[in-house]
Length: 328
Picture 1 (cartoon, rainbow, N blue to C red):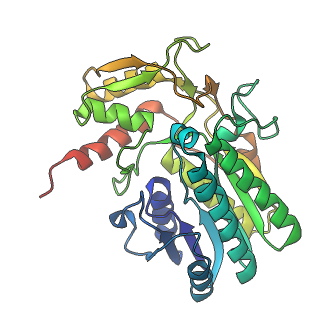
Picture 2 (picture 1 turned 60 degrees about the vertical axis):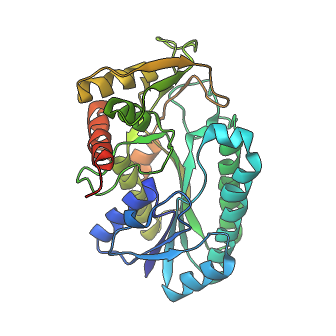
């Protein structure tokens, strides 16, 4: 009985690996190291360097390690890039996920947890947004993830594969023990970029639009600590292992912060001002999106414990400070 974590050398995946190995699970990581790093993988897990689109490798790994659960993080995640290079996203996020699901069906893997996104909602009419609203993604990124959700629904109806889809809102922060964090080069996550500006890693940062229909004109997002997101994955695994049925659930706190509010939090934590410059809106960015996570709390028993913007920023700042130190 083992767990396969795809994309386990990346930001969120590496935190999942830490949680699973801390719990004594037999963990295998499959990652092509395109954006992930070998050093991010906990030494207690086995790293298989390869691509989820390599069916032979995936099937061999599933069989060799007696995998009973797959937690699928691997994919491409940058919304503006998906607009300029949609085929990359339909390959990495949709076609390769299809290949992975097929391998799971062939090898008899019974349980699957999928990393989806709030981008499937587009710009919703209601906030907070529930899982049952009309889905209208605004970007190829969101559509590529939604297609994978549909595949899981159809495959689960036809085969013995139960799943939980978790729709992430804006993930941020780092492992409170300082063991992992956002390390991807040129990452576009707001809190990471703002922290880098505060530390002098970047000369300045851009605010993409201040004319949205929000109180201060900047986009509002529901920022969730990566550790709370991982606890939702642990709850999803427990749900499936206990015989719970397939479901889709939001992962967020139910309240949002604007870009300017995030910058204020970073400035409080760093004790210095950030050079923030106005820039044009980015394609595919909705004005406001906040989660209604009632289903995750009720159906999965999920209880977040890090719902504090300054705490999220503080952990991100501590991690980024480690990364910015010269190598010894």
